[in-house]
Amino acid sequence: MCFPSSNPVMILLKIGKIGFLMIMRSSYSFVQDAGWDAELVNQSYPWIEERIVYWPNISPWQAALRNGLLEAGVSPYNGYTYDHIFGTKVGGTIFDETGYRHTAADLLAAGNHKNLRVLLHASVNRIIFNMEQGHRKPRAIGVEFKDENGGHQHAFLRQNRDSEIIISAGAIGSPQLLLLSGIGPRKELKRHNISIVLRNEHVGKGMSDNPLNSIFVPTKDAPKQSLIETVGITDGGVFIEASSGFSQSPDSIHCHHGIMSAEIGQLSTTPPKQRNLGAVQKYVHNKYSLPREVFNGGFILSKIDGPLSTGNLVLVNSDINSNPTVTFNYFQHPQDLSRCVYGIKTVDRILKTNHFSNFTLNGGGYPMEVLLNMSVTANINLIPKHTNDSTSLEQFCRDTVVTIWHYHGGCHVGKVVDQQYRVFGVSGLRVIDGSTFFRSPGTNPQATVLMMGRYMGVKILRGRLGQAAGV
Image (cartoon, rainbow, N blue to C red; front, side, top):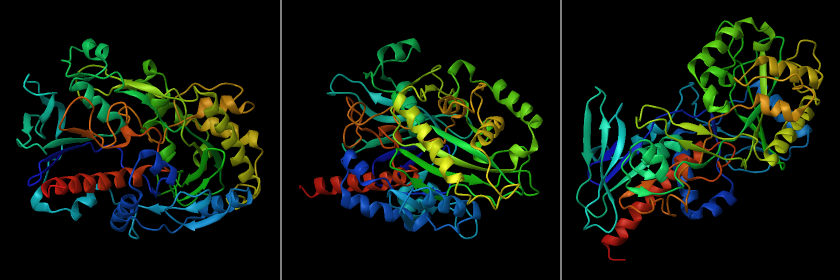
């Protein structure tokens, strides 16, 4: 949690997944659809990029993808750029030249430390509202939280009309916190005996995630480690990316697929009733019986842009430490499935260019059916497989889908918050994060989510200065 001491703002920031390498901006159409001030957006992106973003030294696996994309027709080549442009490009990275990973925490160095207090390991349980009859609507006045020692504490805003709480807990944490604080669907709140502050049937609704499928390419030697540096932005609604370097080598973990390993967060692709620790433990045990070659290679990734399938988030109980149940309904919409098939066919065209032949065992390509079988065998998620996975691309998509954690929705603009991200029906409360998005921005949302924080901070400050000046 952040408490600016001179300005009356309390920011509830949840530190969860730390983003991967890639830093890329959203498309211009995303900015337009969000109703953002384009000039301020173009000032806010560089403010982030100048502090934590670097250009990568492109690895051989990423160079092979770049060349394969171009030969397969995903053109033109746009070089090194943050911009979202159709074709093939290399994006920014949050790793500097020494290999140090920079994060949103580094941006705090740009603030005035005298005006900022940060509480680490503090977990907010709920927002506290003033429900007195004299107020036109409930007003957020503070939070109840647990400190690093497990003690229950309270923090309250100053009695000032500009005082407010900003929730930035992400697409999972923000709707969960609203629900636990009494804002949400009536039945959901009553089910968990949560006192109703405001009925809003849209909280936790419209949850979405960008489905990702991959083709595993076995190699003769362990390729150099790379996450995501090169991307192909196709006109078919999919992004093509790659990762490598997780295999059985002296300097990496045996029997592991890096970001593609099921035990690091792939439960969201399975039905809620099948999500349990036992399923993960079984996966970890069984993968040691897989053939060694499925851990020696790299992946080419196909990710859907703007999925039309949506789901919802509901509470398990009234404990903030209990993860809510989230369903994304991957490929429920037929257009999402057809785009996945398009993406896998695009990967096939890339592999037929033979730019990956320097990595393969025989110096040549593999039949696509062999690669599909190998990809299924790699078993990168916890979904049961089918015998026709290598002959039906639709079934392959369903059975090998994974998340890359680009969750969004649950607190949509126009449904839960207004255009200034103020929560409808209450005062003194905003939600500013990816939970307000109807679609994930760009090929990777990290840059836009960080930019959004800067953008809205400046907007709020300008609004207050304008009020003080009587404008």
